[in-house]
Structure formats: structure tokens, C-alpha cells
Length: 311
Image (cartoon, rainbow, N blue to C red; front, top):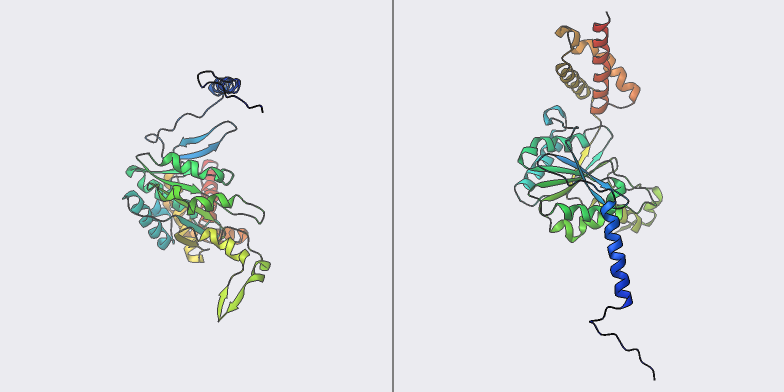
């Protein structure tokens, strides 16, 4: 009978020698590949998780979408709830992950950026993670765990189609141990869909009434399960006409103050001068919301100032 005799541990095998050579080659290659500079959270209030072919990292930037919470009108309930939750995080207390869902242009993303602006001086920071990088969520959160800051990991405008499995990465993080043991991080997400996934009428085929109670089928349960992982739900809706006009007035007023070139008299920017045009603008867009109010303000103020420059 033949048997294989292992070489002495003092004598490296060909396999070991070969693997060491490959490690050395890999290290030399990594040293010349492009890499992202480390982020300095003292200088940056926000960052974006950048996926690269060879490496990934948080790339810092100062939040150019800085929003004053005072400029976000008619979402007082949502504003108060998200502020309270964020202050719990900053105080080292338990806080929930939050899902902000509802109609487009109603202030969901602006509210998150407004909360960041309000508390950046207290050590609040934000990291954006795109839908294409959800698979890296656990890695992102682990990289923030030892930082002397508190973080919002922000997933903006999420929605998933029937054949899109990337939501499972987010679901895994929300229900897993990584986020549970990381006390300085919460996940805030926005979506036009309450349950984040597309819902079809056929999904209800498996639902049934049992003793007068509705029991969802497996398809519905799976789609609800992701949004259920968020402890705080905040809903946003289109606004009434008077609320929309309030938003237009605030946006016009703010824009005029920002532009040093505004040489017109105060009468040039009175609400009655643009009220009807603002309503027509919303009618043409098919929606009344904060985004359309801001877009109208840029349009109307720009036109008035152009007329002043070229009378």
C-alpha cells in the first residue's frame, strides 16, 4: 500500500510558495490601482458610497442640498417625527429606521437634508447609498461603527420591480445583527411606494378571509415584509391649493433675497402679481407640491429680473 507522506512543516510546499507569489503580485497590483482618498468627517457633512471595480469607499462632499427646515411648509407632523427620531440617535438612545413614502415632489428628500443641516454641528453626518450599491450596505454600516459621529445612511427614491432581487440586501441589513449592534447609525429611505415593491392585483389571489380576518397570500406578505422592517413610517401627499400658494410665496421670497441683482421694488414680487400664473403652472404639471412651487419660483423670478435688466 502506498501512502502520501506530508512534507515537514519547516519545508514550504510548492503550493505555499505559489500562493505567496500570487499574494505578492496582488499586493503590487493593488498599490498601483486607483483608490479613493479617505474621508475627513471634520470637513464633510455628507458622503456617497462609491462602488469601484477594484475598491469601494465613501467619497465625501459638503451637502449642497442644504435645506432649512423653516422652508418646508405643511409637513409639520412628518418634520416633528423625523426630528425627534434623529435627536434620539444623537443622544445615544434607541432610534428607528425610517421610511418616507408618498407622492413625488412632496419634500421627502428635502426633509432628510433639512434634518442633516439642522444637526450637522452636533455631529450628524449622512452617507448616500444608491440602489446599485445596496449589496454593500452591511459593509457601509460596519465602516461607520467606530466613528465619533452619528450617521444617517440615506437610500433615496427606492422602488423595486418584480424581478429585482436587490431589495433583499436592504431587508437583510434591516433585520440583521450588523445594524442592531451599530448604535450610531440609522437608515432613512424615501420611496413613491408604501411597500417599496411593485404590487399587482394578482398578488391578492392567495389572500383569504378566515373568521372575518384578512390573511394575505405569500406574494403580498413578501412585499410587505421589507417596509415592515422600518420602525417609523412617514407619509406625504399632494397639497391643497392654498398650501401650494404658501409654498410658492416662500420660494419666491427666498429666491429674491438670495439674488443681490434683484433691483425691483417690493411691489414687483407681491403674491397677487404671480398667483394666477402659479396656479396655471401647477395645472400644467398636473400636481401641486413643493417641487413644482420651487420650479415656478425660479421661472417667474428669473423672468422678472431679466425684464429689469432689459427694459
